Image (cartoon, rainbow, N blue to C red; front, side, top):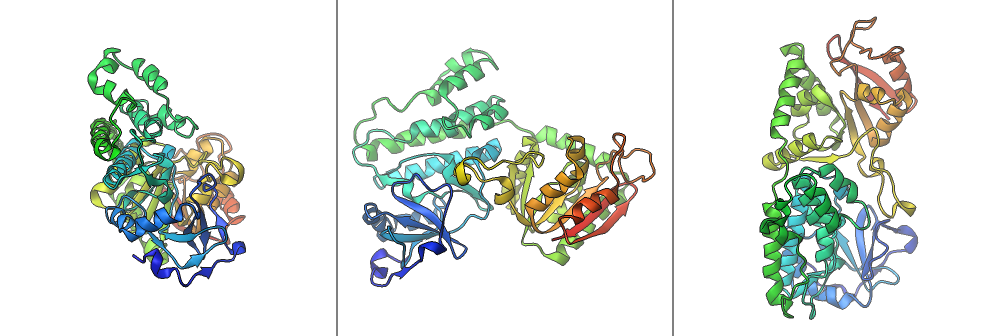
Length: 463
C-alpha cells in the first residue's frame, strides 16, 4: 500500500475531458467516482482528504480489503482539478442491484454491511449509510464499494445508518423469510425501501398475529433509538453483533425440493440418453473453440439443465426471472466455488435505465453485456409472450459483444408439422428461416451448429 505522503511530490494531471463521471456518483459530499483508461477512480475533496490520508497511512483500508469487507483501494499520484487526492479502485465487472438479487444474496450483503460496521466501530469509525446499493457482488462474493461512506464516529450514540439498514436490508429480509419475496424486491428500488408499517401489515396478513408479538421478531423490529450511552466505540459493537445474529437467524425460503422436481422433469423430458449427452458436448466444443472470456446465460427449461456442465470453468452471468432457479444456482455456486453470477432479471423485460442519464439505475442490457450469450430454450417462451422475431433478435444482440448461441424449437413442445424440430404452439408459428433472417439483420454471420428432430436447431451468430 502506497501512503499519500510518499506520492505527494509528483502528481500527474488527468485532463478533465478524458474522464467520465459515474452516473450514480453525484450526491457524495466527500468525493466522486469516474472512469479513465478503463479503470475506476475516486476523487476526494480537499476537506475530506486528511481523513482518508490517515486511513491509508494507518493501514485501516488495507486491513478491511484483506478481510474482503471493502473493495481494493489505493491512493495514486494522479491529480484532477477540484480534488485533493485520487484513489484507484478494483472494478467489479458487473453492476447489479439489490432488487435483482435472490434472498440469500441480499442476506449475504446485509451480513457484509454489518461485519464492516463492526470492524469500523473498533477503530472509532462508522458507516454513514448502509444502503445495499453500495454493495456489489462478483464471483468472490459481496463487497462494500463506497469508501467515502466511512467517517469518524465522533460522539454519536447510535449508528446513523440503522434506519436505512432496516428499510433496505432487514425489513426486506423479514418479508422474504415470510414468503413475501416478490413484494420485497418490488419495494427495494423505492426511495423509502420497505417501511416498518409495511412489514407489520404484510406479515400479519400471512400468518398468526402472535408471530409478530413474539420476542424473536419484536427485537429486530425495534429501533436502535433506545439509549446505548454516548461512547459508540464501547456500545456500538455489542449492538451491531446483536443485529448480525438477528439477520443470520432469519430463515429464508428453501427451493430445494421444487428444484429437485424440476430437474427430474427435465431429465424425463429428454427423449434419449444420446440427446442428453450430445447437447452439452456440442456446446462445450463451441466454447472451447471460441474461448469467450465471459458468458451471459439466458437459457431456460430442460435445455438449460442439460447444458449446465458445459459452462463450468467459464465466467458466467446467469439471469432468469425465477427466484427458485437463481437461488439454487447461487447456493451451488457458493458451495462449489464456481464462477457463476446469478441475477433475477427477465429477458422479456430486463431492468430498464431509470433517472436522468442513468443516475438511479443503468439498464441491464448495458450492465450485463458479455462476450457470448447463450439462449437455449428461450425463443419459444419469448414468442409465446408476444415478442416478435425482430424483438427477440434485438434483445439478444443488445446483450452480446461478439457471439450468440441460440436455440429454436428446443423447448420440448414440438407438435406435428412440416418441420418436426419446430414447435407449433399456434397458427402462423414462424420458421427457422424467419428467425435466421431476423438474426442476420443484427449479426454478420449466422450458421447452424446443431439440428435434431428432438432438440431443435442451434444457431451460432457472430457480430
